[in-house]
Image 1 (cartoon, helix red, strand yellow):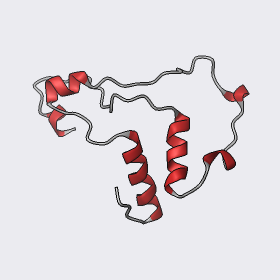
Image 2: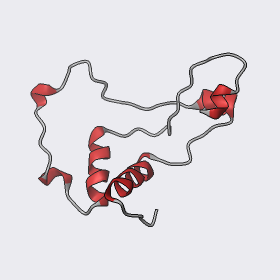
Image 3: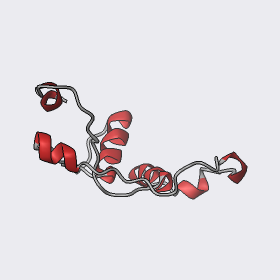
Length: 94
């Protein structure tokens, strides 16, 4: 954020890891951090899915690297671990 604010003019940047993860990947990782199988605790209703939802989501942060010298240090799984551990009040080994 600081590097964005130092630019001479405002611009849009995508801040992303460049990897593709589904919501299921995110949920599965969050449950795994606390030793649970997500499929035993989560149900979904296909009728609630919107037909316009993207199947593939992947951010390209090339411009942030080129213009700001920024690249992701953490992947989705690292962020999930930190979020869960912070919420649970624990410190993990990651």
